[in-house]
Image (cartoon, rainbow, N blue to C red; front, side, top):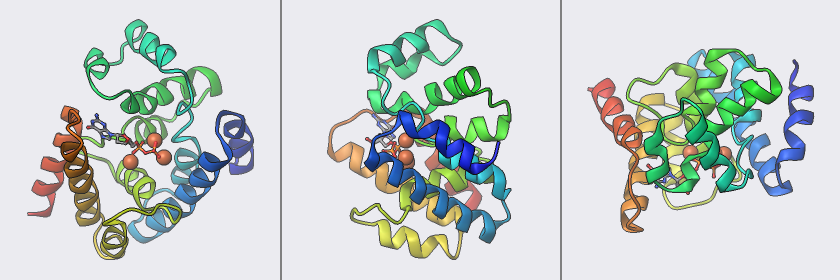
Length: 187
Ligand code: DGI
Ligand code: FE
Ligand code: FE
Ligand code: FE
């Protein structure tokens, strides 16, 4: 599959706005992959498909969690979390993607995890800082991303946790694992 085929496959699943975001994530992922030595092809395909399940009805995603091997604790947190692991599962089922590195980059793109691979970090960070994103703190993360992948990823997850806490939202354990794992890697 080349990137044009991937874009054609994902397009019907996204809104115009989300498609533009997806193109921005691909651009940002390409830059990060080049800078930090990740596989350029895998970064591109993972970026294109990362929000594949974003617009599935939440009842459908909850049902998929219940009927698959996905962790059941996903059901006890914000429904925004579901599209990442459900997306990875559906990409395998519906699109036939088998590459575990691509699938895990999609799976963990929202939360991260405690020992992220290079490709997982690239997609996690690209999703956060892609050029169409505008929110407090994003420029600082963009600057850090030119210097240190771990420090930039840490600042991103830190900002996300602080944002969620201010909103009185629950923090998924993997999100906290990401924070702790990156703190350890930086030391
Ligand atoms: O899909 P995108 O909007 O491009 O970005 P994303 O996949 O990073 O999803 C961001 C959303 O996920 C945002 O609404 C915050 C939410 N989120 C991220 N981590 C957690 C979380 N929500 C909860 N409840 N707990 C988390 O740990
Ligand atoms: Fe997402
Ligand atoms: Fe994100
Ligand atoms: Fe996204």
